[in-house]
Image: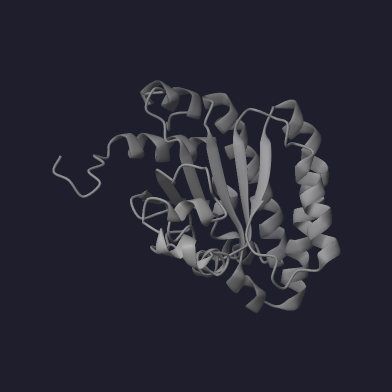
Length: 241
């Protein structure tokens, strides 16, 4: 009999948890296809998995989780799916904000405004802003996000003087994630072995955990397994361990 997530927590060193976890939520469409359902049903079930991960994050007092919700490449998907995803994000914010506030969770968006209607952007940012006074775990929603575009947009904002002073140590100050720690761990579901333009600069030394589990089936049990695996890694950052 498989261990419950509560039993697995006994194997977790809560003093060595990653500060920042990035999650590439892959497999919603395949989950739906297996059940002969529309792809948007998979995305709705995936939203339930987000809740599971956030709940455990609060329980473990994690610092930061970044969810890859919508990439700059996702615009190439069928129009009905894209519109369904945009609608789902708004619906979930409306539904979850009261609970997020109760749990002292701070929600923020990272990504580009390109291609999005101004009224839509204003509404979702206003919803997220209802959590800005919270001091607990932070949740980034990477929305209309692309790592390469993030780098280009950062460079375009720089003055000649800032470019002259640019270094690997300070470039992060100009990214969407300015002031945040780089991800210690990136989790990708559905068995794909790629980063898909996610946190391209920030992930230079991230540990990567791949699971075959499709995102809608990813819950607290799978999340703890990923954290346990992370704690088995030796992080050398290019040195000798």
